[in-house]
Image 1 (cartoon, one colour):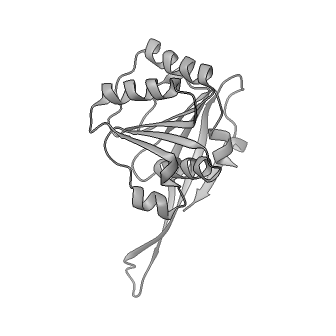
Image 2 (spheres, helix red, strand yellow):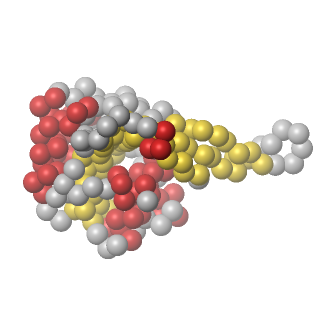
Length: 187
């Protein structure tokens, strides 16, 4: 259900959170959802953080994913996302801006939004903090809620699972966030 809320055709969604908050897992679920339907997705990976082996194990059909590695070049990553958002044929264009997101002007953010609207693509911007502001139709904040450890003895040694919490920060045309808009996801 959460994936379908994030993937709004012709709109830009922003997913933010610190390391180990679940944001990358949710990005992977979005890629899986799109590629399992036989649709094409593009991922602009600013910091070369995408794990294709892990994504394939999670069910992502890699043959339906265009992976653009920006190797830390934030301006190039933004330009690639802008160009891909204008290309017809993609159901999803995801821009992972990483841990040190670029400063994005209001004009650049709205240019990305307009590109998504015109092409009908779902544009997902993922990072540590918000960078597109009011240009996003939907903004979700992720945070790690709980870790589950397993193993013999009094000190468990293996991570068995993680529970993440997702909060609606902004929804275009909606009233302020309420407690009912908290979403849970367990990995």
